Image (cartoon, rainbow, N blue to C red):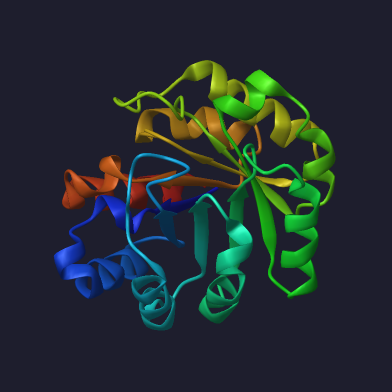
Length: 211
């Protein structure tokens, strides 16, 4: 299982240094792009995302939590990320968005959150996606606490969907073994990496040695 640190949890005033740290020690770089509309949070925009993708020496995954994904299609394409995950719970014609991204040659994945699981109807979208990212905290929880039931859903999806499954949301090292055993492809980790980089690198090294 890959560990993909999220730059949004690092020090964005030293973004280049944080990107180099991630690429030296981990499998991937993860970029969360939030516009303050789909969610109340604002992370960073595509100027930094393009620069991060150009600087990164490892694969990059983009995670778009924005109100109008089609508006940003060309910007996403310019980044050249290995995967782009879209949240579409608010889009009337989600299939058209996925089709447009695929037509542009963008490896597109579906982002699923607690909102999707409450409303349903995401199964057809999943059939059009190359991969899926499941938020393992409630998207509307300000504390962003890890929710085992959401992780359980992600693990069931990894076993049954035939898609590569990412998990993202308060993931910490103690839960990695269970996630990996269930076939989770990658774990996006933020606070667990950046609150103590040295400890995170030691844990990542032990994890890599075991797997």
